[in-house]
Image (cartoon, rainbow, N blue to C red; front, top):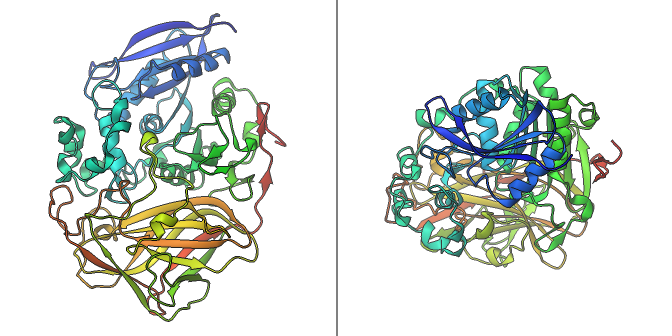
Length: 569
């Protein structure tokens, strides 16, 4: 189709008079054209964004790549999430009414760029015809974002620095994240790096889910979203939780059947940065068939919804997921998978479950002689979590034995399996716990133990006790009170092979992914003096702690993506 006609730093007016800067790419032929809008805090001018824009232009689309408010060449002050509701709507209206526009606008992007797509959908722009949402965090800020299950997210703290000011701060990969996470009080996180006017300071004034945050998430917000959405994530994506919440809300619970039918889901063996440059991740190679060229899949999506081309994409199964362990794609009509059944493994112990040498067990029947296992949690010496600071990634599929060797980590391992176990869907740990403190955290992490001992990480979760009944108010526990909690480990798609074991580890920290809980029960943004806690997990008939998995006995295997489509579709 030839090269694009490029307009650089076009001014796009918002309702309050602020001008946002955009690069516009147009096919070199008469229009009008359907439009693909990408709104980003990461810089509209980088080479990868330019190359992707060229690919869309060659497919007959006008492309608008825009710096969000307060970033790059755009005016205004950057206030993440909140600004994207009205700014996103105004940008869609602008794209839909230009002389070169057909009036059909699709949105595209990942991570924060998923937020820039989904937040404005509640205002229902008539020009927004489709969205391609990759690695989109939850719209609920206490599930994922400033907080992760109510716990301050150190990753988001570093993001505050990475996207502070007008340009990205690439040097943060050279900084000591440990020093950053150990700043106290937490309200001084941004100021420690000279960001006195950062939005981080404003967030610290709201330690519970109050009216300040309800503008981002309120009851029924997803029902206001009426846009066809293609949801893409990875089993190791740090923002997988957002996709796991949003897709079922749109595809299964939305009141409009047309909206329900207009949703698709794709989850691969990928981390947060969805890269198809390699089929390898950590020590594992998932095969060339695990790779999917997402920009080209997006073009299929937009061709259908923006151009009206019946290319068969809506005749394909709504959900496509990669089953690790088996290294095969599967397809289903729903997520959670309708054929899934709940399968529980109860925690037990023949003797104290501390570390790899402990006596912790996982079994489908209650077993073990010891009714509880106890460890000491010191906030100044927290248990670590896998972490890639270069990619803002809290681990993937690495060997966890070094962490599991610690005495402040309880380790529960099953007997070797005698047949394959397909775990596809949500995972949670239901625990009965006690602490000597007024507040503490409990972390649960699932791994696949290979016959040689390699403990392959699958996913993890955390629960702050003060939020065990919800995020609206903090509820400190009574010291030594036994309480029941559920830890959301999100999900996985993994086949445990015969001879392998399941392992659940439980501890009270994941440093530096999450800021350590100081156990005081006080304002988490103000506390400065830590308290050592003695924490206990019960595993008895009276207090049956268990790991709960989603098992799919007979998954529907599918063929991979090749030559512009899914083979066999």
